[in-house]
Image (cartoon, rainbow, N blue to C red):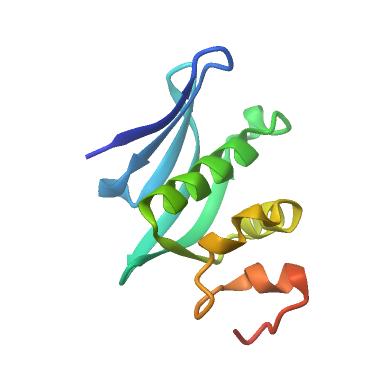
Length: 119
């Protein structure tokens, strides 16, 4: 069942976890304009791909989506494996979410910090 995780009426933005579609969805004025896909593997989420409609790019919406997802995972005490370049890029600018990353399966996130790409 879908769960609203973020609702900012001033910005007209809403982020919803839609587990039946294995994605977080970003809505602007009620229309879906972005997604961040994921898979559940054991007790972690593998973050696959972030996409925002071309017409909505450049507004910081992908950053809102990624931040809400990482906040949600932290609140649920779940770890993440990052396979999404947008999430990895966000992480290089906001190290405060490092605790959300699964140290055994970090994905591509470690590359932004000079980590071992084989990890």
